[in-house]
Image 1 (cartoon, rainbow, N blue to C red):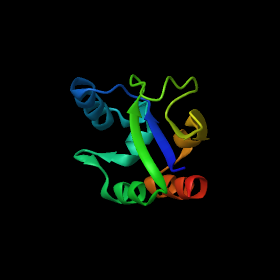
Image 2: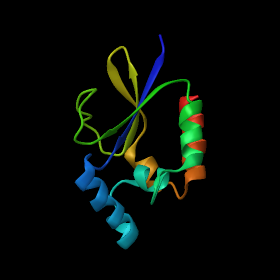
Image 3: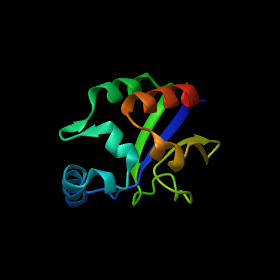
Amino acid sequence: MPRRFVFVYNADGGLWNLLQDAAHKVLRPSTYPCSLCALTYGALGMKRSWARVVRSLPGEVVFLHKDETRFGAWPGPLPAVLEVIDGAMIERIGAPELDALRDLDALVALVRARLI
């Protein structure tokens, strides 16, 4: 059975929220609530180096915002990296770990260690 990974941002979806988030990241980056988004997105979209890592993962990859419930509500803190196994979401990387990362290289190393 193919693997399915879900990256859940601590941000709401939609154009208005995207614009607000972009401004927040520029004006007050230290208070931006989504470390996953802050590490993986620049001003013009997903960072290319991160996109390459995502493509290398061994399974389907889905990105969700906290207000999207395609796989059901995640009760834990966000952001989070989950894996769907037999219909259940299993946390692979939690918010405290994501929040503690200093840069994209650290995230890449953690993702490779936990998901590959």
